[in-house]
Amino acid sequence: MKSIIKATNLCFAEHNVYTSEVLAVVMQQLMEQNPLPMLLMRTVIQSLTMYPRLGGFVMNILARLILKQVWKYPKVWEGFIKCCQRTKPQSFQVILQLPPQQLSAVFEKCPELREPLLAHVRSFTPHQQAHVPNSTMAILEATIKQETEGKELQPLEEGRGPAPSRTKTLRREREDDAEPQPLLPRVSQDMIALRLAQEKALKRQLEEEQKLKQQQQQQQQQLRRGVFQQGPCPRPAHPCPRRAG
Image 1 (cartoon, rainbow, N blue to C red):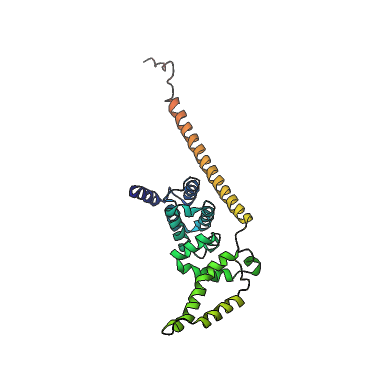
Image 2 (cartoon, rainbow, N blue to C red):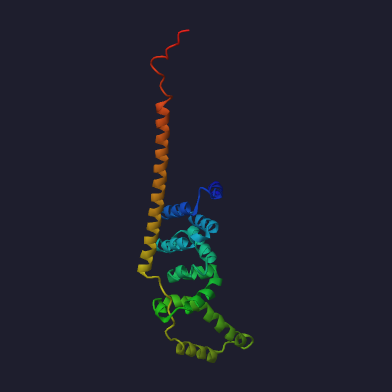
């Protein structure tokens, strides 16, 4: 594994060869492999570090990884979370597409993502908020509510023992406040289809450019071969007549 990492680092050092377009094709090809390569997210993060303008393309990669259930590959899942952490707030839209269980796992490893993500969600319009499941919103607000309640109950628990009346009051308050919470927007199927179409168009463009380069190289090689096959200019069949001296 170390030798593979060294080899990839040497490749990344060749900026003239491994341009942003080439790396985009590389990431696309790695995404199509099954199972997902262990060093996939390392390659994605290195590519994004070298070419920040690939941010939009990387977001498409992350969204497609969710469709491939990236959490089933521990190493790739770990890199997925790191990439989301590095690319925030751009990655918030991707994180919101995770199932509830995986969303909780992200917050367990990166608890600092919860509050900014919740603030991001609350900035949405009511129409956008209407597309998020209640389970997702409950996970976003769960820890914050627990911390608030814990701070309120802490003075009562110190030296006084349990306070059932206060607990019942908190339960009633929670029931009274159990109004429909603003929902998070989920990326629609049309948006995912649009992203996939953009990726296909980019891939097609890169393939056409590569074919054009190959054709130009073949033409140059054919021209060179034609020159070598012709050889030097033929000599005249009869030598020039000598002058009588």
